Length: 156
Image (cartoon, rainbow, N blue to C red; front, side, top):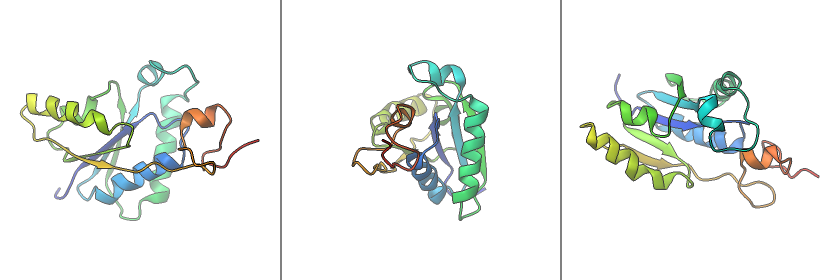
């Protein structure tokens, strides 16, 4: 396989337009394949007080979203992510990591861990936030609170 192999990771629950932008950005650059890490149930619930859908539901939602937005016909693997630096620090063949503005600060730690393993650093590709109708960013937490829907429409 040639080209850029890209990774992206998240909880993806509930899936929303911000996640879709993250996935679309990853697909755009992943001409060498895409690895999507979906956090395990334990990892997803480790630092959250809100309910998170089960990993299999979240994986299915990610797969359906990718089917809808993949205009390039990329090769995609969806894996369960069990820890924060998981897949991208364990595989030398990952070339780029798609991140949000919120997670961009984690890239140096990812590349430090890769260097410790003798791997080349990954390029960080920042996917901008998607804003809701009220000008605030779309997030799963806001959806779970009933403030907005998955497309950023403000709910009454």
